[in-house]
Image (spheres, rainbow, N blue to C red):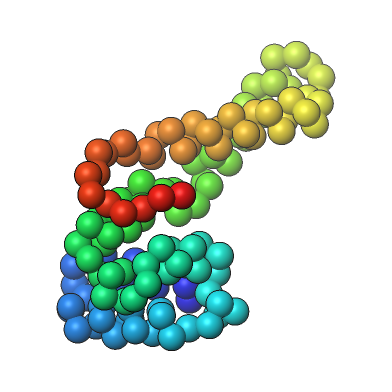
Length: 126
């Protein structure tokens, strides 16, 4: 349920009233009902009204637009890398080599989807 319901906050088809109801639901939910990411997002703001501020919703939209929803691209890169290693050397790759290739393909996926906008006034601190 969460964190995917957070996407409704930045969906243009969702009315302002529905966003307010969802924000109220978010702030009434117990920590056991939320995943760690949603709990972290919620902890940044004291009230649902503060959560619905334009700058915060803009940041949330950016987060959804720039974060890969799956690792399919990374897995494709990893499988190509593995077949290249085996065919190029004639020997199976060591687990450490495969792990390094996997981590590099994950990093490439993240770099490919990263957007580096400059937000001024967004009250987010890690």
